Length: 170
Length: 456
Figure 1: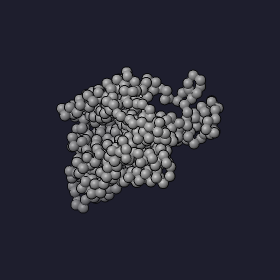
Figure 2: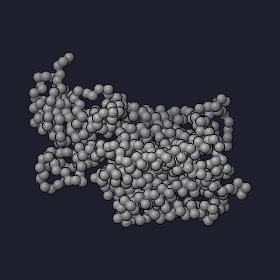
Figure 3: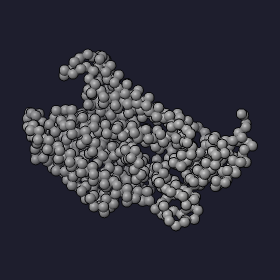
């Protein structure tokens, strides 16, 4: 649908007015929203997360962590097997001390994978600010950007204003 | 929250800053520094220069310059290494463990504590290099095979240590940077000129859009969950450097929890030492309030009491084991050449925190500061007392020997403090030393209709 959507931005000063706007927009069937907040806010999350799955960052953590465990045991056991010398009457591949290495690598790979996952999923780094971003959104204002067909623009403006937006612009 | 019907634009009491106030106050901490700041920076830089010169001297002359002779091959360098690793632990405890427990009071101090962690681990990381003598062979520590395909011995606690410390530094740094991103975005939008350009690069285009917060929050929680077992493991692994050896006074299963508790104890003392001047000079009193000081005082008191219990256990097991060498080691430590050090340690770590049983002392900056400095001294001497006197008096009279510090190693140790403080002083003027986002999360959110603003 080239050129058939319009973006309307409402700027709010309060959490409750933002939530009201989101509730009203969703009730009217507008789901293509971008919400900007200076801090993560429970009330806003509750509205937006209602029908969304949990962030898949945790899969990155799981895969990274398991990779770490496996590589820790592989590294220690494989290198011990390279030099098959029994010392102290202990097995060459002695697991208890290797748990320490495997544990540390689990945390290391799991943590790095979590960071990478977050950066990828949040689509960072962004070289250009998005069109609807306003510097006030990192200070004390909340923003709701609605993407809708042009013929609905007036009704969206109405909803945003009605909920208590300080400012509504295109 | 309030019973009176307040007018729609909410009137905030001075103790409740608004979102815009937080931005303004944090920006204020980054204002061009005063001459006092430059004075301290120069003092610290001079001490650091002395430390670097002493290290150069040690490289030139050899390890004899540091007073290293058998049996005292670990001496003050490993003492200070363990000390700095321990300092780092409180930062992770505040940023990760208290995050998972949703302890709201942590928000205003966690950024400074986390920076402290990274700088403390960076300081600690210098000591294996300094201690190894020929530090240009430091890459020997990496796990790779030599020319005969012999790999590092993964059964050795010293190799575990390499893995633990490097994981700790990496994960703390990642955690710290992830936490900084939204704050730097806030600074980017509030500043101009060259600062704006640098912050824009560091913020990676963060906008605080919901889709970003969604992944960010998840990732932050997961990192906290990973950092929590990590922090407990790191000092345990450090303690096994000792406990795995057979030296009397080291060979104990008590060591892991004993070290972790001591680490948190000393780390909290360092947080107090750093945060109290920050609060004074940056006028952060609305954020770092008496209740925060009170919480830190309580934590110092509790970890101090636990540590006292461990000291008692250590002495009791040495006696109850019936092992001649354990008993002799303990008796020698507390009555002979280094007895002053062990009694100083008992005073600083067991007696001085007891004044925190009084609430007035926990909220008095002077009392907190004095006790924290005493605790830092006591905890440095704890590591000294584990390492030096134990090695001085082990099984065999032929290998007994007293360690005497030299000017070279003392200067390097003092220089390491300068290195830590120069990093921290630089940090507080370049980066938000108070977390903008987390402080905003804990203060009441702006609400128009106060009638049903049930704040949780």
